[in-house]
Length: 528
Image 1 (tube, one colour):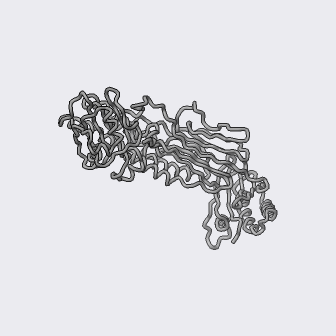
Image 2 (tube, one colour):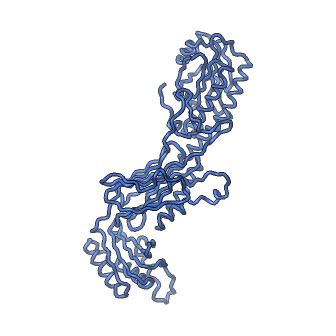
């Protein structure tokens, strides 16, 4: 009897709060116009996402949703408390045949009262002599029931009272059915959301990672950990607008766009700006709330020990190092807008924790047919509710720095003669790392990348090898022209360099820097 109210019913703006509000309106309207006491019990299919999705009507539980009475009557159950509906009682019979019924007079020694001792005790205490039970159902889906009571000093219920009670209950049932379908849609969206939140991959750039999406609020929250070239990692936390399956769909699209842009090594600001662009169909919609929401995207480089992050106004990024926490994201005073993003870059001491958070977009007032805005958060017994905390998606990652002994960097002049020097230095470094078997492959790759850099750029060149879970080879130059594999004729001598690189490595690509570009390759540490 003291079972707690489901978590879904406690969230600010939750559709189930509408069930408590509209049923209390029913009780307030019925007392004293129709009855001395009015009580509404609501099915878990209206309050619980799991039950709403199951579609099971038999054996479902009920909770006290509303109560009102004259002359300070006693109450069998508190608002939100799970309540028993024993078989053989008028309440259970009405739920089975979905017909309203009058029990008048209520016999003091009725057998069904013995089956329901909790209600029986309160009915005797209040001097109840007449009862009406009306099921709340739409299309034979049980949503709950209403019980109307008359006490000593009031006349017994008559057929006219039954018709009035059924009319009040019918209007309430229509609203509860909208709430039930709303809860059902929320549940569908949450299942979709959970299916898309894959466990984070194991990456050497981070020691531990943990993500959390709130159980209350809309299912538009998401996080992601993205493996990026050159041992880097992308961390994302976002919260899309919308409701139910709409929010989950928007979340999946936003997650896919940002991931696709991130793996192309786009700048974080560009990733966020383009990733948060609304779909074309939303741009054409009129008077529709934006689904973009809030997001923060951070790229951590364990080699340079730096982090570059882009975030919308309400998203936050906090770094916790040995000296404590310092916020490097947006402040709470910044205006709420996701149209633009802010960029920050900072050093990350080894072992620091990066904490990303993104709040749920502020929900618009929402009404259901015949209802009031959901901002009317009043508990019928305890008075006005305190505003609930805004749901927030969080992602935390403890960083790990690449050891200096696993990094080798050489600055090269832009001259053809340095190609041989680059090959020799790479081979010597591999030997010192205990990887001499990679020398033949790596020197071929180095030769091709350095040659291309000399041919298509005019400034200095940098060669860098990184020993991670793979061997990373990078060549940086001052040109922003990306190399591309040619298709030489069989008789041509050249033009096959990048094809050879592609064949010898696990992957290669280009990422751009303020001064030019970096062409990177990854090779397995263990040659078969």
